[in-house]
Amino acid sequence: MMKHRNTIAFWAGVAIFLAAVLSMTQIVRNEYPFFAGYVILQFIALAVAWSILGGYAGYVNFGTNAFFGVGVYTAVALFKATGAPLVVQIGAAALVGMALGFGVGLLTLRMRGIFFSIATIALAIIIETFVMNWRFVGGAAGIQLQRPPVMAPFDSYVKMLFFVQALLVVIAVSIARYIQNSRIGRGLQALRDDELAAECTGVPTLKLKLVACMISGALISAAGAPAAMYLQYADPSSAFNLSYSVSALAMALIGGTAHWIGPVLGAILLGSTQQLLAVTISSEVNVLVLGIMLVLFVVAAPKGIIGLLRPRYRLRAGGKP
Amino acid sequence: MDLLLGAVVLGVLLGCFYAAVSVGLSVSFGLLDVPHVAHPAFLVLASYGVYQLNESYDIDPLLAGLAITPLFFLFGLLAYRVYYETFERRGSDAGVRGIAFFFGIAFIIEVLIIMQFGVDQRSVSATYIGKSWRFGEFRIPIRQLVAFAVALGLTVLLAVYLSKTFMGRAIRAVAQDEEALRLMGANPVRIKQFAFGIATAVLGIAGALLIIVAPVEPTLDRAYIGRTFCVVVMAGLGSISGTLIAAIILGVAESIVLTMFGASWAPAISFAMLLGVLAVRPQGLLGR
Image (tube, rainbow over all chains, first blue to last red; front, side, top):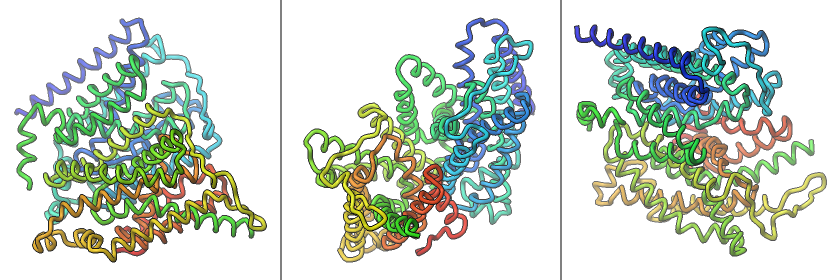
């Protein structure tokens, strides 16, 4: 009964959120809020997607930038080759991201924590190098893109992208929420606490990790797909920028990974702080704030913001030696 | 054929240099099990320290590296203390948050360097930089030879220290069986802290070599994450002699790819080798 009521509340919240986003695109004239809002929404999607593997299962993926960049370049390649619309680009990016997640998972998920993390960094650099040597999408120099005409009911492309990214956030959050409450989520949490014990009690650990890696990868790539259209430009070193990895992980850890709301809170907090700082000070300070907050939170508030807000998460974690 | 031979020779020189930048990680990650992804960031930081001393007081980069070594030793002691108190002692979840912690530190160091020195490349001046020796067809820059000699000396010195001295043996013992050491009345945490200090101190010299071999920039540490971890993992965790061999393999591989396929593929070599080793033989070539 309780769970049922929660579900109704959740979907009501989603409906209100989407309605608010849609009416904002119709009412607000100034384009700047959409430029800034797009980035924050993108971070929410990345942080939530990252936490499906990183938070629930405790496998720290440093390759967020690999999946993000693959999403960007799937969209770019498809758009350049066939002029495919945005929806198709995003769908294709999700599929490629899922396939990549499967490959990466198969190759690396048997490794102990830190080795998995290092392997994912390695993967990002290798893929970036391939894209740099890929002439069709502009190589290292990057590629300029012309936006297609915008679709009704939006009067500018950025507003449309803002709405599309909001939809991606909703998809990511509802999948994360579903996983958290399902058998997959409980299995992932069990293997996070003690992988050997989970394996012994019959949890199919490798299969679960693979599924998590595929879903997480698909969502990250999908979130990256509209980025080329947002910037009207794509180049390997920004598409595969390591700061996507650090941001996603920092936002998830700062918010807390025990519940899907954690990454959302972390991304809103850090994303809006960064937008303010980037405007008022500089992008270096931006990264500095990110780094300092990450270090402070992992040291002082291991369960993130939700751990501070809801002490029962701390209690549950305190039971372990 | 001469081209290939030249590539191999340069690769061996480069490899010994890679050994010097990796031995510290071989101690901190290989022996002590600390997920120290900020190791290359500390390395680049050391290079900038050397650059500053060279620029302001015209000190030889190697001497400058030696001068900042004690500072880095203290830095290492402090870093391990923080890591131990916040992660190892509390136990749960040390892996995930430990990596995130060091990654955050690496990012902070990068930004601080950018804010202080800007994003431009920096290099040092010394009598041996810029000249080269000719051997028939190919030339070897003297800066590479200097880096090679110092790096080899540094690696051998650390290997001897760890295998021959009392403290060195204690460090290896704490890596093997911490509990046994505790029962014998030693304090494993103090030993580990000291070892981490040594691992960081080595970066003073290694940082000097880094800026002697080529100009540095603030985000150079990202390329060295792959190289250092590749060497340490390929070596077999904690093996110092393995570190030298693995580093030479990496150096030769990079040098050959650079000659045959061009510079645009070079960044991926170390990472591809790392991935390969992790997938096929995670215990390393000379696994422990």
